[in-house]
Length: 358
Image 1: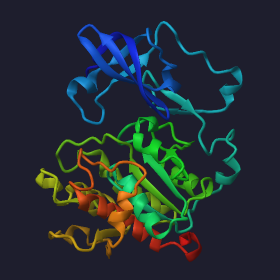
Image 2 (image 1 turned 135 degrees about the vertical axis):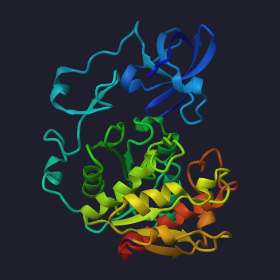
Image 3 (image 1 turned 90 degrees about the vertical axis):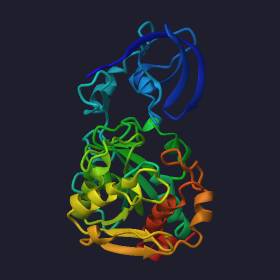
Image 4 (image 1 turned 60 degrees about the vertical axis):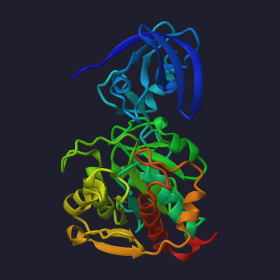
């Protein structure tokens, strides 16, 4: 296990979005691009000395290709006031140097504790589960195409980025979502929860969601093996939805543009997560009009639903955030995004009429 440490000096402040700021930092080998989370390390300024973890940058990772600011050692942020000690007891990114202590949505100090203390059911709420974070805006577009008034919440799991602040997609969707609940080791959402189960309950009973999307944050992990990918948790999310009395809807990862054979047609990620891990039946959505054949046999325990896509391309083009998966946009990989939008459309069709009104 290796952490590649660097010490450098901030030379410029770059782009900023909710919870994050980019920096130019001079280190011994030159200038690197870096990312800081001010809520964790304080607000960096030009001239500050910073300690960096440059592992992801040196590996050339597309999603995580930043040097990450670990500390501003010469100008530490102040401690929170003494009154904050009783506000939160959930520790996220536990026992790492940047573990964060947050207020759980169902803790006794939370204003939502009374609502969630005995909550155990999400009342049939449609929950769209996806493998990749890039599916989120496409699913939202599909819901809103037919149910523009529906309240859509996002439950972010910890298979990818742990800080929700890393996601520029989430920043762009602020005001378009009822809210984000970060669960497991993930943190930085509008609400914090311990598990997918408590996160779903918070989405329904605190955020008032009509539909919820569950997927990992950006930057998933994959090893190219059957079981070695973080999106396997999508199957566990289906089980959680069913355990809480919800209606699980699976957004299949479908593509004819991915250069890797294991992801062409229905990706092996979907076949494993839904076909092997998800023990509860779900509605698995296939968009109508696919120009290539897909094998539905491994998904036999579920309800495979073929959903029309008329109007969905227009809805996707109107997305408030750019659509991108593995550096491919809507034009390069249309069926990936249409499959996710079709899952959102199906979720909208499961809502009672008042929730579908504009």
